[in-house]
Image (spheres, rainbow, N blue to C red):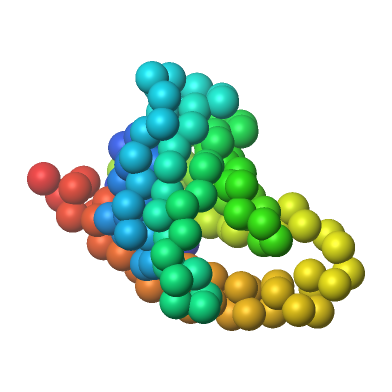
Length: 145
């Protein structure tokens, strides 16, 4: 997704997970669970998310990998999905960037592929389409100031 926002501003926004509930549907809240900086590997958050079954569930999320202005990766403790979120950024000049957002499952058990992952995949895909559009809107609005 191309965004009219410089890559550093975009990275600062997406790498602070306390912003996640502002742009990603289904995330009811997300708060810091420790005193580490947002881009420090090992940083933990507590996220309350609406599940595909319509329930709310608290998930512990950890920052796993950070390359400033290039890559931000988190992993959540939410069995059986065991999500991994990857946000890759690339500068496109001084005032624009490309953002690639991916959600993966760390659960490779065959029974999950049949029973759980198809439902989760459909839900996340629907949320991702809206979430990425909302992210673009927020970043471009912020950048226009």
